[in-house]
Length: 230
Image 1: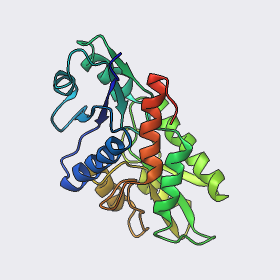
Image 2 (image 1 turned 45 degrees about the vertical axis):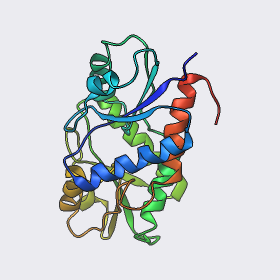
Image 3 (image 1 turned 135 degrees about the vertical axis):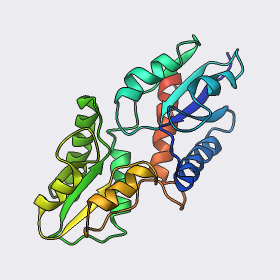
């Protein structure tokens, strides 16, 4: 049997820094899977889109789509299914989060700001019209709080309440913002703006090497779909 290809599907961004960061993650995943076709496509904004990405994979090769999305919103539950429906040998894995390995990456990014014991923490999340995706983010905030031994509030950048600026204002006198976004781009810039004077940690991916926990997570999603263990 032909080993299934891994098609990583990101949201897509117009930010060159964000594009480079996501590409670096997929390159790192490919290095972990040397005998597997690994490709990157996008559900929005960028090309190739899902259909074009699938067309570029040999027709006799099954495909595992791993959404590079932090929660299971409309893109995972609707767009990916519709956009991959023209091919019958496609498996779509769960979204990346919630997962303890994302919390590992969040903690690593927060360490760059060295929050003090009296600092309030707010998790900046994109927000979704599907409240199941928003609940995924709330779960991640609780997981982060359990890891750090403190409460973590949630602030949404779009589609849900409380908005990030409101969450920051009500959290306390000194606030540190954890950025629950995959890569630099529009939403990270918006998070910085809405946070005002509160420092904002970098997104999960940046110009440095992708966190090993994120690479592990993507590889694990693929292995789970094909019945392998790492």
